[in-house]
Image (cartoon, rainbow, N blue to C red; front, side, top):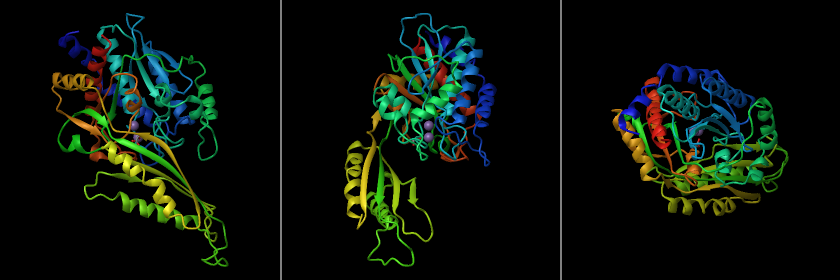
Length: 417
Ligand code: GLV
Ligand code: MN
Ligand code: MN
């Protein structure tokens, strides 16, 4: 396919349509402060999936879903034997999430495919738009479940058994979503993929600060996540002596402080987050009997990440005092680099479209991490206003959203040609 054809495909991207769809999705699970709460496999997630299927149907895209809860919409190509090109992201959000993280990549994919259809240039290979199940890992930890299972990096059974804070399993929650989407046929899990491209908001301030529109993502920084369980003993706040107490809260706080001290770096590259901290019984006059907390640890240098992550267990154990502590590593993902040809396609498309761009490392995690294990993968970033993300203020302009979809349309039509 020549450059002229590529430019023609992207010319069919419709900024207003993409903006309207982003707004429509933002109404599903809308929060009071202008954000979104669309937890994985919730009724809001199911409603968002149903909306996507409906938009796809109007375009003649065939929906299907796999046993891991991933949803696909297929644009058939002219060659039935060709491997599909995949593009998408996720529809689930953080509890006080924004209107763009994940959903932007799914709707940019829909917009790009709609542009390809409107251009009249039928691709040789099929293009599958995908909404991966539970990228955020907020309700069910760890995240990126659907893409991990699809890519054979996690077992389906292992994922189905994970429970949320109320003891609901992924399996049970999936059953409900399946019921809501019962008209959508089931497809095989996994399968060959020609390539994967994910558009996403940057979730950082660099593109905006530098007046750029497109980030050519060169890789994703590594991340290790842990669940820590500190067991003490419930006791009366007035009658029990300090010597008698097994205070799980004090032990957990000491662990978190010791970890924060150990991971402090003057360059501010190490990312250490305790985002969940649950205390039981959580009553003012009862010594805490149980604390469970999460650890999210990231660093772009895989060796540094290995070394720091290996300190988590000994530091927790050294600060447990009279309490018992269990440390479970939930996920281990080293830093990765996307293949140069995929980055080259994104860069060349941005150049052809006259969009200011630069190479950029993703310090956030994405489903592209798991696809990278099974096919040539790449990502396209668009600016995030002030870098705000995983919060209700998340914002990307309509113009930038459309620019990302244009680059995606070009890249997809080249990959599927
Ligand atoms: C993805 O949402 C991440 O936490 O990096
Ligand atoms: Mn995301
Ligand atoms: Mn996210």
